[in-house]
Structures are given as C-alpha cells and as structure tokens.
Amino acid sequence: MKKIFLFLLFTPLFIFTQNNPNAEYWQINRWEAKDGMAKKFELAVAEKTKKFNNTKETAILTFRIVTGPDSGKYMRVVGPKSGDFFNEGVSNSQEYAYWLKNVMPYVKNQSGNKRTARISALSYNWDNSEAPKKYIKFTTIRLNPGEGKDWLNRMRNDAKLKISKGFSGIRGVFWLVSGGQFEMHVVEPYDSHGMAMGTYSDEDFDYMDEYNEMFGWRSLPWDSMKADMAIRDYGGEIIETLEFIPEMSTSIE
Picture 1 (tube, rainbow, N blue to C red):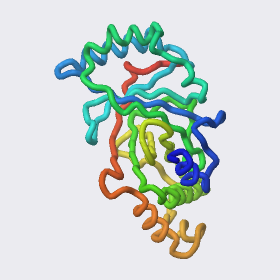
Picture 2 (cartoon, rainbow, N blue to C red; picture 1 turned 180 degrees about the horizontal axis):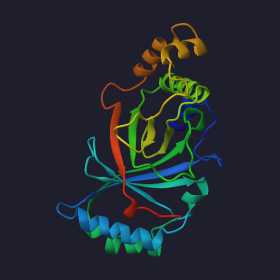
Picture 3 (cartoon, rainbow, N blue to C red; picture 1 turned 120 degrees about the horizontal axis):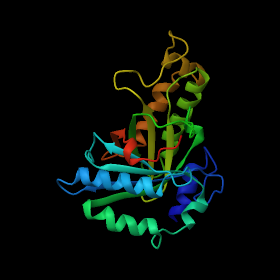
C-alpha cells in the first residue's frame, strides 16, 4: 500500500520508481564520534578513504555538520549510482572489515542510512562532474501524506523560472526512496557564507513579477501557501549547514 501511495503522490510530476534503471541514486549516512575521539575518527576515516575509495567508482564525500540538531556529526555521501550498485553487498568485503577494525572503535553512533534519488525537474545547474563546493545548505522536508504534489509543483515552477532567467545558483532536489517516509532533501552547494547563493543575469529581476507572469496572476502567493501547507507542522523542515572535508573524501584529479 505504501508503494502505491508514493507512486500516486509523485507521478503527476515525474515517472519514478525505486527500480528505475535510469535513476540517479545517492546514499547518505550520519556518523557521530565518541566523546574526545573526533580527531582519531577523522584520521581513521581519512586513511580508510585513501585506501579503499580512491577511484571515481568508489568515491565517497565527507561533510561535517556545523549547524542544526546533528551539529558536530559527520555525513558520508556516495553517488551518483545506478540501482545495480545496491545489489553489491559489503558485509563480507575487505573494506567493511577494515572499517569495523579501524574506524568503529571511535564511533559512538551511526544513523540516517538513507537512499535518495535526484529529481532533475526540480534541480538546476547540478553537475556531477564538478568538484564539491566548500559548504552545503541541506534542507530536509517532510511532507504530509497526500499533499506532496503542491510542494513539488512549487519547486518545479521555481526551477523552471530560475533556469529560464539565468540564475547562477545550484540546487539538487532528492526524493527519499529508502530509509524514511515522504521526505525530500534540498541540497544547495556554495563556496562562501558572505556571498549570495546565486544571482540572476538581469540585475533588475523581480522574482514575484516574473513568477506571476510565467505561471499566472497571483500564482506565487497561492502556490507558496499550498506548498507550506504540504509540509508537516512538527519537524517538517530542518535546515543544516554542511562543511566539506577534503581529507576525509575521495580526491580525483
């Protein structure tokens, strides 16, 4: 029943299933170091990454969570991958054995093991070939059952407008396909806290006027209201800042 409901919820905007062979999947995990062992954890992860994740095919990115409820923890990201990647078990691999022996002694907790799929229709300027930015604004959105289409419609319109007007910012929108329910991730990379996360080619650009012109009179306040109502009242929106850690990530020239 859950799979049928998800299909009905998301089909109006895109054809997507967990087994879509053309999907772009990403795996994320959150790690917490034991008290007083953060540095040892970082060094152990860096050494493991250098040893086992030194190619494009095995690449892993690591971020420190600097704001939000998980501040001080780490996020490890694998992707983009096809669905076949998840057919490969790791529990009996050398890599897994190394992690258990050399990294787990410094781990207090592991959580948030989630598989997501990027939705290209809601994303803009996303390029998997580019080097990671220094920071990420990572927003988790939890939607009310049956109301997700309104939030998705608002995000789709926003992406369409920004692409048409030459917006320079970057956004990836991801649908959680395993590890939770009715959850979306909005990922916005950037390099400096002191600069805007994107600009328009026209300095006189007025977002409201352009949105209403493209999608109909007074459509922005109406679409925004419906999108806000689609988000859960409690814990429906969590914004975190992530900082990229090159030493704990794959380096590919």
